[in-house]
Length: 349
Ligand SMILES: [Zn+2]
Image (tube, rainbow, N blue to C red):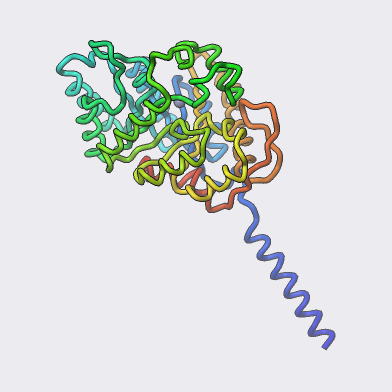
């Protein structure tokens, strides 16, 4: 009998350890990952070499802020080094907006980018914050002149990715801002600091313009960059995602903003909307940077973000100085925010 008890105890112990092993936490380099918000404006292979080492693929995003052809050429060059590790989103120029052939020209440009392999189209905050039509009105993202462009993107089964508006901090004076990174950015970019430009569209105007666009194009696949500028309120972001089912959001350069919120609420947001959140760092490399130093910097950011999402250790997120406890998200959620959601929203097989 004693012998039988011993056998049962040993078997139970073995079972316990075996199940423990099966549930072992997934490690950073074991999970294939996608950084869904990145900017590559250089030709060398070093950065993507590092990404491959870290088991990352990259979505490179063009922005209507630099020369578009030049940015596209950087991407095409990167494809020569790493054909399977990079996807890209094109952008279009707002130059000539008031001319009658602007829409036709824009669709032609997008067509040629899709032929080259672009997976989607990025629009930037210069729409809503910078460009005005010939009558001096701000051009918002729900302007009817965009409708044929968005219809075309949808008809080609491509994704519309939009950085519209800014963090709520942008409409506050520097000393009232919540995030250190915002204070730092707007003190160097007064042109985008909306508190200084009360005649510009408000935070609410920006959000409404996106909602109106999505009401007009309910079937377009849409990714809102930077948590769709709703980094200050998980409740608001949740309502937005509920209301517009074809939308997801990336978290580029807003992981630090999450540190200022109640972490229980942040964790609930990630669990509830695990199918709608895309990991993205929003880092960018330029031709005049040291590519190895840059790659090491990004490697560190990736590791810290991973620690924040996957463990309950204390971690200091990029752009903050205080330690925060990690969210310790389940493996299933990590697989979605780091991989499956980007594959789905950018149709990356
Ligand atoms: Zn970006």
